[in-house]
Length: 542
Image (cartoon, rainbow, N blue to C red):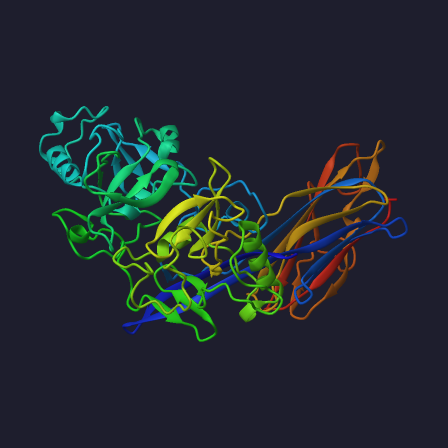
């Protein structure tokens, strides 16, 4: 099975008063690889073939530890980009192709939060400032919450907010997107590890539910985003201020009708949407001009060739997307299951059934009449860390809740593949212990036919695991085979055709037991192409 690592951004530049949109694509594929110990051939081979999607390695019969890193560099380009969606914060992978495996999105700054030492904390990811004490405004219904915020702005001494000494007079009740920006893959209690105190299980927002204006959007226990009565006082009120001007700006919710002074429809905080919001690419895909994310136009989880459609379990959803990549659906190899942040970015909180912007160009979007979770929910790739369930997106109203990965109580859920956005180019560190007569299979990135030109740096770290010293010097490493047009090899000494640089440069020396030597090879790709090469080891390595 092939999995994909890719980087794709919709970017904008200005020329003579026109806003020009283009897409930068960098794709690297993780494909099947065989590491083969060969008794008779004294060779380590690397074969990378974009067209076949396979990487084969043959290793000589010495015992060695091998670390291979594949880095891809592009020339610098300065353009104005669409809004960057951040990573969800999930770093552990529960299955190939899931959120923890791909980790799509903008990397968080470090540190994520800054304690301003005045009872406030700034989120360095979004630029928003929050009251440090998550409980000092108390449990409030919607009307009471706005009154409490007004009092905080005028008479902060009336509140017992931990360490609060600031004098800001522009606090507000956060909209639902601002609240959600603090979530990771579980509930809000993780904030206790980042300077916040007294964080509650749930909070109310300033955003009204479009199809029932007596209800508001809230963050509930376990991080669930769901409607809640405006009259109830179960959850807390929190205060935020400032404009989202960080690396990952918070998106506007889409709500433009005001139901109370100071609410979401009144203030309309967040990154405004472009017009048009979406672009039809004419190939069965739709690009969101706000985020640069590309979605399948048909959201109906249809059968495509050997990829069987219909509602699915979470693992079946991941398998469906992997199948699309295996058949290069619509010419792309990097489809994935959207993570939680990506589904959140689609929601228009002024709409329902479905809760998508009015100018969306999608077809077969599942919504009502399902009375409970089922095919009208879409799987995300994000796992809920508290109970190992998966987050699911309800397209009728835009809510997010956790569901058993086997499927919801009324059936299995739907799949809406996505591609593009920010995916960090992989830096692969795989320790492979090569034994005589043993075959080891791993997954490694490979260049992509039709991808961008650039420089590949291949790094191999060889560790002598024998009980005796072995001779090691630069001429042992040379490129024995190089195929594929428009290739440039950086030859830094060594034997004929070599491109090897040893670190440290041990020269003609012995590699003692346990010692390592690093070999770097640079391959320049003058234009998009597939290529293969192998590294020949000879001499004293027997």
